[in-house]
Image 1: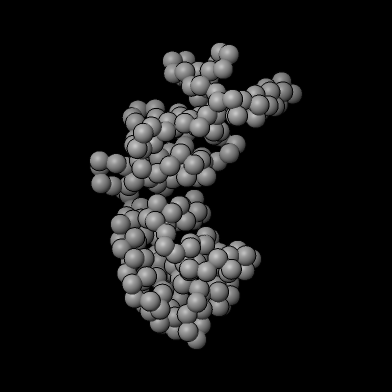
Image 2: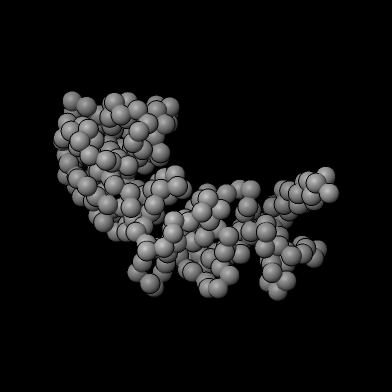
Length: 244
């Protein structure tokens, strides 16, 4: 579970943060305040992992908070002003959200937390470093679902949603395929078509302009993606030959 606080001197903006946090099962909201000075006291007294904070606030702003607590705590900056983005990233903030931002964009920021953090309370062992994952809000289930990258075969963009094809099931979400592409490790996954992302380790063959996944599923290779895809395939092939 990730312990977090929310800070914004505008109550309406703070309410949105509180609502988003409450919808996210692996976030534990320790405190929400419109007074940044209260946040200083909370950060000094309690074990906080993540801070959602506005930048422009009276007396002490979000950037000041990040400077005060160095990199012991992760920060996500929220503001209506894009001018602060560069300074924020120089301080090592996790992400920078420009208001108004959607819940999906909020979740993308949260998913940048280090993978070694325990995101949910489970009576099972914490995943090993090889079990990298992300969370998506599964349509029709009203819950967030952990997607282990090792189980993900390919992703398919459909009319109003995106389908994640896993080893044992299919999960649908309203996240865009571009959003999901940003979350996936580039060394393991690649966009090969405007509607498809494939896992390299699930590719069992290539026939002309089609990729074969697990010997049964055929994925088209888009014209604008073909050159980059075949270059990577060639590079991986040469690397394996060198290892022999």
